[in-house]
Image 1 (cartoon, one colour):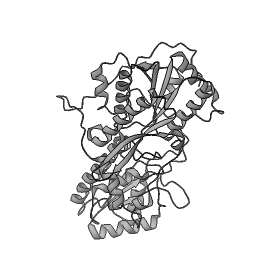
Image 2: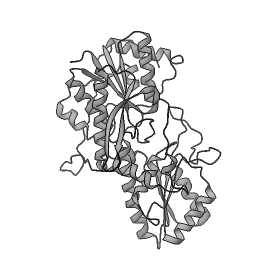
Image 3: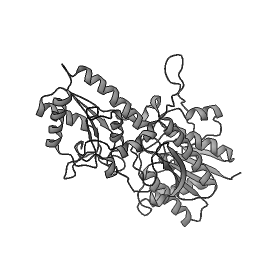
Image 4: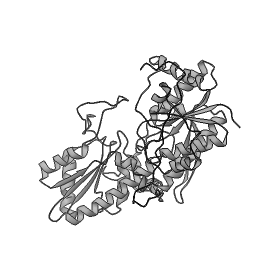
Length: 418
């Protein structure tokens, strides 16, 4: 049995399966005899000493978390800067760790979260405080370095592929007298993984989606409009999947919403579909419909990928195992052994090889004309959306999801001054 307390926190945008990872962390922590705390609203909860003790949670409730979307303990977008610039905040984290005998810190998030976990591990070493920090992968953008895929992506990819296929049937049915062009907006700031997943909806040259717009390729409006016209004239309608992060050759985001920034300093995106739809209507005169799935694509637990669920559980279990084995400053990553049949395993990778690195779509995953996916991309993507892991439904026809009562421990430190 291990000694001390494990502190788990969720970070950034949540996914359909991040609670599966939380469930696995709690269950594994209990098997090792650890007290498992969770930060309410992510790292902010740790800074505020707003900690939830998971000990009273019944085993059945913890198990049911694995099939509940959202972030059960709350998440946040709160970026900690360098150890020098935000020294006081990092020292506050250390104070909270000491006050609650935290010996293991698991931070479940993406690139910025991996960076935070790495910095916390370095500060703990500087202070000779016995703390093991483990990053836990999560992001629907699928842009973490080293890992073959990120838990959360497979389910969002499945939602995207299914939604594009279903919407395409709708458009095809109405095209003779109504909508000619449909634009679907997928998440993805710099990496076109989710947009690429839309490509799974069809196989032939006339199957939807007819055009995919990737952030990895500069957007040329004239060329795009010409392709839309060509597809409509040949097929009768055109379905477009556009990543929110597409940019022109000079680097300007097509969906730049007035230059606003989010909490991580990133340009606030969203709205590329409406902009493209407007240009198609104005330039070509076609009736256009567009959609911005936004949170729907990352929260759709009802259509989660079974592969994704298994991987989300696996990284949670591995993170606890690495922690108790004193494997500091690492992250459990997915390693692919084979495409067909799909075989994968979990291995430890150093946080310094993941933090602040970003993985974009490989060139050989994007078709030569820049508007579709290749067979290599299809081989990569198909196993990740495979299988169904539906929630349990109640008599009212709605999913039965867990909602936790997040009572926090009495504070022992002075209030946190942001």
